[in-house]
Length: 221
Image (cartoon, rainbow, N blue to C red; front, side, top):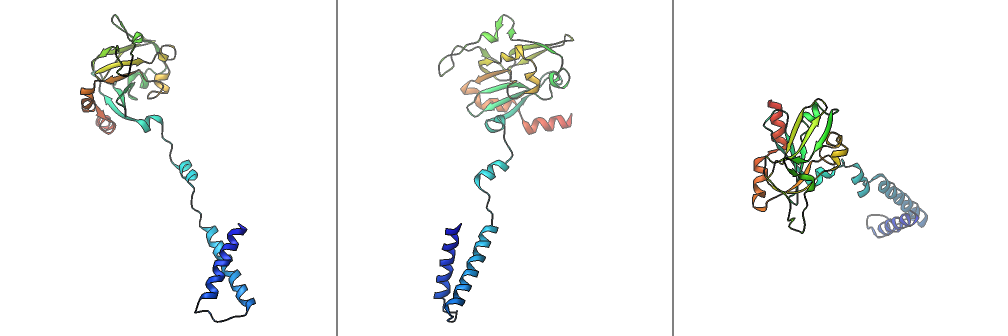
């Protein structure tokens, strides 16, 4: 701070001495004027507080991983209140989740008893892929069943793929911790990851509703 003050003082003194509009004064008066102007300059600099980058970042509303890297789309089920959410990552991978309006969340949140990843004779949990092209994964259609979820009163729900493509993995954590589907629906509570076929990638969004379209649909209903 002292060096800043001296720098300001020297600059002001130079301006005062070289200005043609200031009459000649004795050294004492010139020094007093220089000190006064330097102090005013310093006070003005201190009053102008520019927020730092760190302060700017801290004050910004935080974004979740889902908000940063995924776009939300919705698959409308055939039965009321059985809609699903498709989180489309920038790399093309889709995370299949429940919609916040699904009955499993709005009605049966406390009564989910089990998650079964068997679809007929096919075990989705046994799915394995290899290599960059993710070969060997089970092939899914839009209506393919990923799992069946049973509630304590016997109500049973089928969760579908929503998109056509290769099954990368199912979320086996749900078998032992069914509450993740409710508490972390669009993050740790995802149902499965699906990689759409390259030639069908542009058709994925076309067959789903955007977040705004889905919310408007709910308001109309």
